[in-house]
Image (cartoon, rainbow, N blue to C red; front, side, top):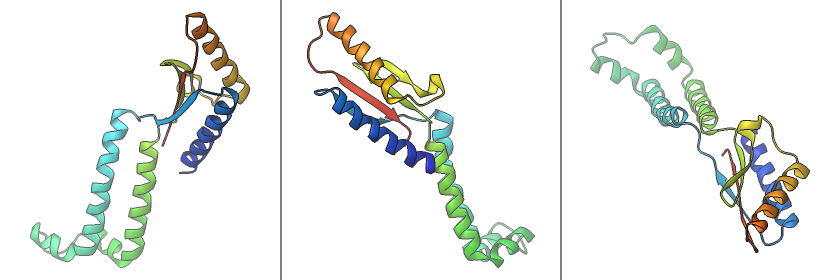
Length: 158
C-alpha cells in the first residue's frame, strides 16, 4: 500500500512538473494494467476472503451439511478468536489484492511513443532526465512537421 501512495504522489508531482515545463502539453495519468495472472488471482482473493469469513461465522451449520460429524480441529482454533480471524482475513486479503493490482510501472509516452519505462529501466526517472527525453521527442516531432501541442501520457501502478 505504501508503494501505491508513493507512486500516485510521484506521478502527480511529475505531471505538475511536466505541465509547467512544457506549456500546452496535456499530461494524462492512466493506470498501467498488471499482468493477466495477477489480475485473475486478484479476482479469486475476495472469494477466498468471504469463504473463510463465512466458514468462521457459520461453520456449525456448514460442516454438518458437508457430511462432517464434528468440525475439523483447525476450525475450533479459528473460531476461538472469531474477531481476530475475520479481521486478519480481511486485512491480509486486501493487502494481497493491493499487491496483485500493482504493476510497478511508470511509463511515459509522447504522441504514442514510449519515452521512458520504469519496467525496462528498473528505476524511476529523474525530473531533469525526463524533461530532456521529452524535449528531444518534441524536437524530433517538430522536425517531422509537427507544430503545436502534444499528448503526454504517464502510466503508473494503482
